[in-house]
Image 1 (tube, rainbow, N blue to C red):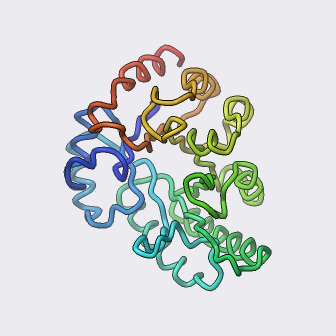
Image 2 (cartoon, rainbow, N blue to C red):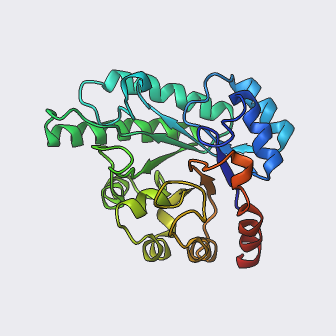
Length: 265
């Protein structure tokens, strides 16, 4: 069954984090995700998930210090110790809540950093992450985050993400494909998806421009859904958009998407 996953860092911000799992279930989602859920203990998260019949679909790791504007530290030279500590924290949480995917965020290297050193640090940290997740049964996700969203982000294109994935194989590393970031990069996602289903572990949905809910921009989502479902995609589809209105007023698309998923499959 394809899971429709609410990103609780973006959606249902009208209520406290503790209440967002129930809000997502009430709205018709079947999974949730959050990059930084640690304010809720794994035991409490499991209780909320069980009560609502939801699963936790993916978690970020090594996100850095948001108060300093950091968007990840996986590609930051000199932060390897911080990376390992932060990644391990997320991996333990993922294991405790039976979350299958962990996404180490690359971040924005300092302008003075040497390019080949950044690349080496990133690869070594991903290698550490792959080995750790392999032992525990989780899988690494890599996401291309556009410079439109995070200027200077190291892992900014799908092409670069594919290069890293190919170093480790599609069983050890999956790609998190985001419709907004692809569109912001001018990348034609549909033909790529049609040829690369096996590379994809998770999908993020947001329209472009604006990064709001489906139907507010120019992305044609139905062909993409058809390509995913007909290609045998089995991961979750996560909604990581900025609601243009209170979240529940932006979800008119969800029943149609569920129907399409059922019909296409």
